Amino acid sequence: MQLSFDGVVWEWRGPAPYHFVTVPPDEAEEIAEVARAVTYGWGMIPVEVRVGVTVSTTSLWPKDGGYVVPLKVALRRPERIALDDTITVTLTIDV
Image 1 (spheres, one colour):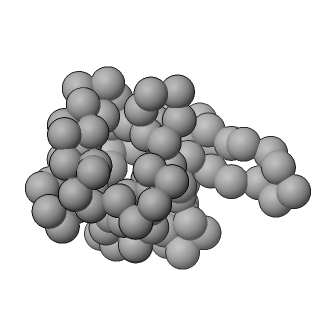
Image 2 (image 1 turned 45 degrees about the horizontal axis):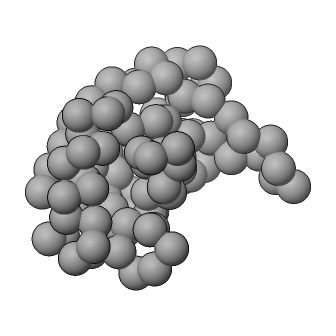
Image 3 (image 1 turned 60 degrees about the vertical axis):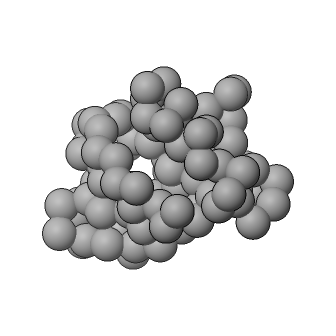
């Protein structure tokens, strides 16, 4: 399964800052349909994330009935992604 969407980069400040993009509701519904088959526990869903030409692997985090995409430094740095940027994200989920 492959999904693409635009989203705004936001930050959660915990013990260390994390950068995320929220999966829009329509795409989150599509993910929810396959979630049970692909989760490895706690609702976490392994994905490949592409932004620009950079690809990274991570896991979607369930949040507020939807999902958020963590943006690793290895993805943000080469694509020069900053807080409040609107980016195009392509997710690949092995179903």
